[in-house]
Image (cartoon, rainbow, N blue to C red; front, side):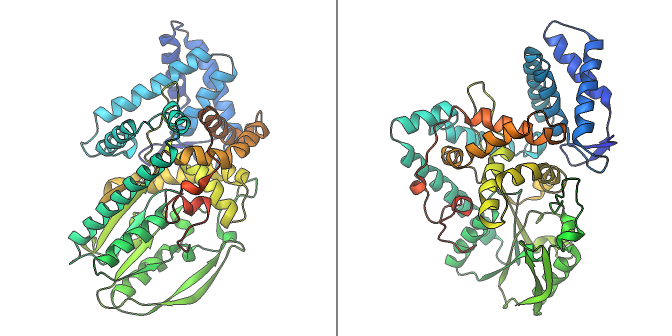
Length: 443
């Protein structure tokens, strides 16, 4: 049994099966088959799948439940109705957009920026799988890669300009955003811009503030939930930042990701007069991390893969799926985790994003899009076999329904895309090198 669900705005509300029934009923009506008893029966199957997948201690998101509804309808042979339900989800998103503020749309998405990204993709013929395939076929992939990299560098320069405009008051620059959005490389590139402008800076490694792994909640599969802000010693982070801004010397902890053990008082650190403190963290916008730092002292930069690439049926790739592929590669390279481990852990990542990261996007001073359409053919060449294997491995396993749905969705999206195995088009200082390896930057 589950009692609560996580909404898109980060609020936790009571679970209500009737809402699932009503949504399926509307899909049935759209197909010309109004039958409330059928909707109730399907909702019961959805609930069985949810209860088999999630424990009372976990809180599935609205997104998770809607994915399960689509899956149950498809598995039970109601393909047309599943498509009607997908359309219903899209219409609901559009309705939320219409009610939103000018700067934001539904699900905390910056509307104006999304429009600009889609327009850029269309101009460069990379707004769809078919378009990217055409670019590859005619030999224009290297030019597309260069254009994507140039666009990202321009966004970084604009972000740095925003910081420089407030250089008289800003002492802390926070680079935040969900997992594998490219925060670390973005922070390095921003620091390069600040250095060129004559500003000095120093970065603090927030990863060292993780509590010992044994202190994090563990599920029935032995997987630890270290994605929440509370996995970090927030009080110590806040205290250390305040001390640094006061000109005092601190000794930060050291965290070993391979052993899961934190050692206190290891790295000595201090800021020189006028030096800017750089923070790269998933939860950089979470207020408790910097609660005692005045707002005017902080510049908050938000990084996200705001990709606008669609499949043949018009479905856009989910930003979280793009980041999942990146993290599969990074986890394998730096954290001794296999892609299957990343996939099965991803539900923790996604729920924490909705509750503790994406919910704070409106507090950002600047938003950077780190998605580059040319990365998708390269990511496919490096991850598709893992996605295919996971899709087969978890088929029919009710306790791994979340992983199966994600793997299946990514598989179907990437299947028609031409893979590119030669990653030499990726510059040594590209953000993508943070995930595929071979970066000129030390991580």
